[in-house]
Image 1 (spheres, rainbow, N blue to C red):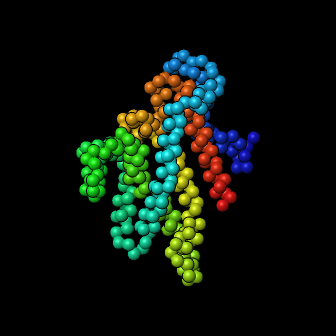
Image 2 (image 1 turned 60 degrees about the horizontal axis):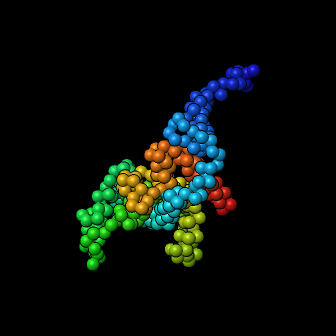
Image 3 (image 1 turned 135 degrees about the vertical axis):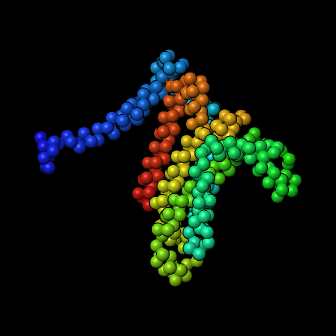
Length: 291
């Protein structure tokens, strides 16, 4: 049969066939295999035993898994409650039309996100050095009685990770907020000012509703990125850190899959993370629709 313009009806499918084939081979098939693998206990790539849901039951009583979950969620909470308000504040500062050097300042704040994660981790591992680190030297110069040696990477691992990620990602999220702020209606701001609204009231009742779709996207992006934290602690701490204080969910997946060769359990951890991410994405989407 032929279509309305004289071409066979299967012609459109011919054009999308390469994408469907690549997507099936490199996405659907690996996902299906990993789901099957999560129902098995494996000792390397050749020995596998079907155990059903035992891997998922094991997660419920695995202390390392819950340590990784606690660390990951603490880091995620800090990313949302500290990083995003800072990014929004910078965006509002750089959105002021009378501010001189706005373009240069935008580049300065955004440039850390262009640097690789491995480079950032190596740089902050030197800055957080217990004896000669720049962070400790700076704190000693401004805080009276600050100790000569402060163990950032031994006891305050999550704090070091949060500070490192702030330096890297605040400017990145700032760009999203800056784009959203530039689309806020100037007429609405002017009308609210004429009605007697102060700066805080204009921010809360005019700016926030206007940038809400972008803000929701940035929050979701930050949560997903935080739950996938892996390279930064791996390089900064050369592993999970003392007493697993820097252990994250993705690092725990890596340890089980590539260091302990338990690919089945690693797949169960991976699918747990995937289900969590899908749940957050669906919840955020429904919340946005309701608003």
